[in-house]
Image (cartoon, rainbow, N blue to C red; front, side, top):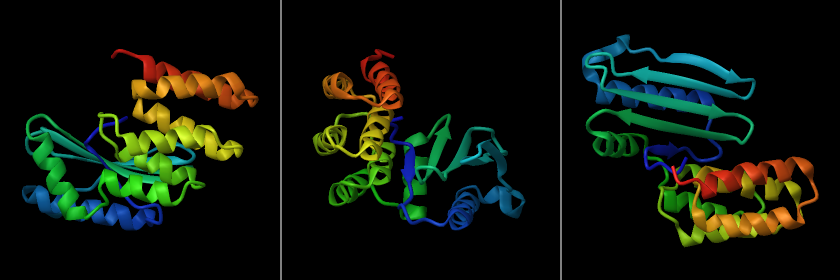
Length: 194
């Protein structure tokens, strides 16, 4: 993903509380819609649901809240045809969510929590961040397969070319077939030019 428009909630976020907070922020940013604004809801998988608030007056934007109960991760994506950075900054201010560096710092203090690492990857931008890259590399080297899986998922989300070499090393020693498959997917994302 590696998109500056992803705003990630802390790991202990209550799902319905997140929906209420985003709904209040949408109403604040798009007051012309008033109380009529209700999100569309979709269950994508048994563990992933998405709430979407389209900007109905002009059709120029959309706010989506993804609840991934499997990771767990709760994050907002902001889409706008004109004022993306402004809208994202306004949402970050209204929701008072941790920054990408805050998520990376939390992942560093919890190296055995793969969900914290994945949330840090979701919050990260497209530019390679050495601290986060080192956390992903360390996770790939762990003996615990759950932590390695978190490192692989984080690498795939980031898609940084600097993670290709550590993924290749991980692939060479990985014995779990499912994790090998995940590494191949992450490698494609980290070596893709698009």
